[in-house]
Picture 1 (cartoon, rainbow, N blue to C red):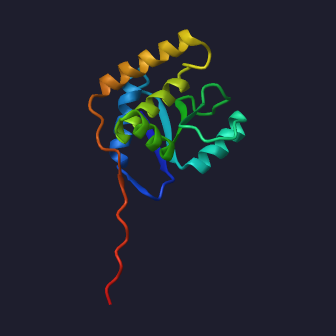
Picture 2 (picture 1 turned 90 degrees about the horizontal axis):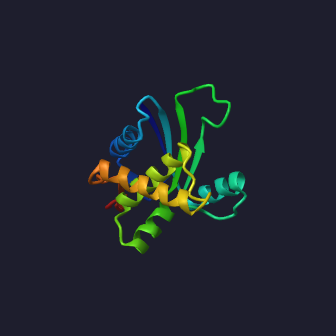
Picture 3 (picture 1 turned 30 degrees about the vertical axis):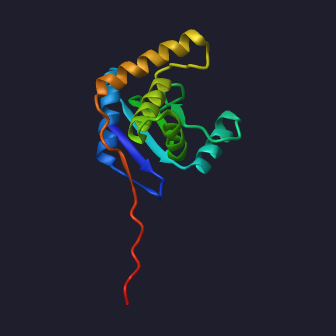
Length: 159
């Protein structure tokens, strides 16, 4: 199992080892221990561009999933890509009264389930099924570790 992480953020420092470990735990929980996963953390502007290009929706969103098994993939072990908008995750966490770490883990689980064929937009029954699976996976992960921290402001140099 391999997790590839790309971070396109300037305001937050990502604890990459912790985030990759959470991703590995998600893959284990869904029985994809031989799969590879790509995770990208982005800002709202990049997410809006991706959402417009691939879903024809001209707005940012919280998470996008690009399944590789649905395409002519030369790498059969690659499950796909999960892209998470961190600014959107921050807003959603505040609105729901959750920690940012929990929100990021939940979005990662949500994205990975999309890669496995779950689709909450299909109908209410599928949405409920996906939501139950998300909660079960988050329980198996246990307490979510610290995944991000604010970057310290650069100090002014004294003269």
